[in-house]
Image 1 (cartoon, rainbow over the protein chains, first blue to last red):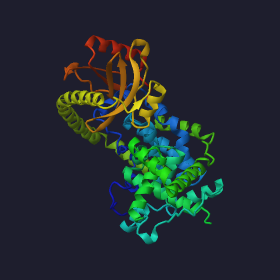
Image 2: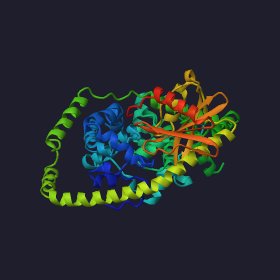
Image 3: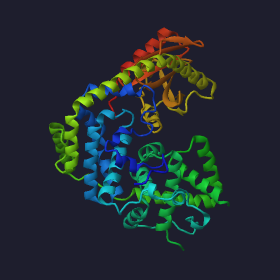
Image 4: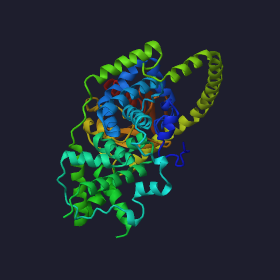
Length: 222
Length: 269
């Protein structure tokens, strides 16, 4: 395994190495001082199971939706959600009582990637495997020559659901996850940054890039 | 147009489309949108992409999954051994771990010692911190009074203010309207205390403005007067509230009672 050369960008690898993935609280979940104290009474006064029921369960449908988009099929998604639920349950004490939705989806997202690495290693390319130039290209479209131009001639498309689905599946995993989190889960930039563990600026550039790619894939040029 | 400008345009257009531009930039962008036909058509294209993606059929939770997860959790709790399909080596590792419990106990004791030591340090630091918090909260109030209006979102409808907070902050308080008790909800703003954005609800009582800043619970400040403003602080399970106003402290206490009565501690989201 390579050492992640791009700390802060993407930590799928780290999540895989550390089975207690929850020990790394999502960025921002501890943004308030005094947070430690705040979380304690909630967990201590209640049974772990009921905390889990309040924190993770309400987001189960969304978790499944995300898992299905990240893995690409229904049975993998079921495995991932089940796995994620177990991880969440075992780590419920570490829930910081800040944002249950982002916390839950972070676990689902990390579980999906470690699950994919284990069971579908060929299906995913991780950011850490890319060279610096390739990363640059992924986020910013690279040099002029490789930019995706989406000139205005690309009309408003009449893509049916199947086309859209296919185009989404063609996106690189890092771009697909931001567009899914934004449009399907309808999260704001901050939550997306927290869940994917990348800076907000990177969320913005990946989103913009993902949309340009989708337009290029779906548009019919006149 | 240079590639860089183009790129910035794209980002701004995306942020506008996602409702993530601050109001001033959003208005500036809307002006450009009205003037620039090419930008407008690219923006429309973005909107139709959004429609296309959002109208995809939603994957529904398979009916049996919830039950399977429930039973997996029950099994996990009762046996403290993972799923049946968990690899043997994990279970073995767990057995090894159980054997070395005394070492664990030793480690736990060491960790506990460290935690207690750091908690003491934190408490000492926190004392100073809290007085700073009170000053910063009052500063937020004063800044609010100097601005054209003391809030970022003007609304007397709590159903507008609450979602506005929710979309900006990880935790947002209940926003009761206390007009019946003499405190009219006028809006909300985000203050920054330390480095953290927090929700401040703004009420009017006759000509007086009351700023109610909400911090994560466990950081009460002492009741005091700073720069001529009365500061009153209380906590419930979820938040520490700090009310700042030029009202006499008796009126501020009435405000606290009204707010506490109208705002039961919210459940965990």
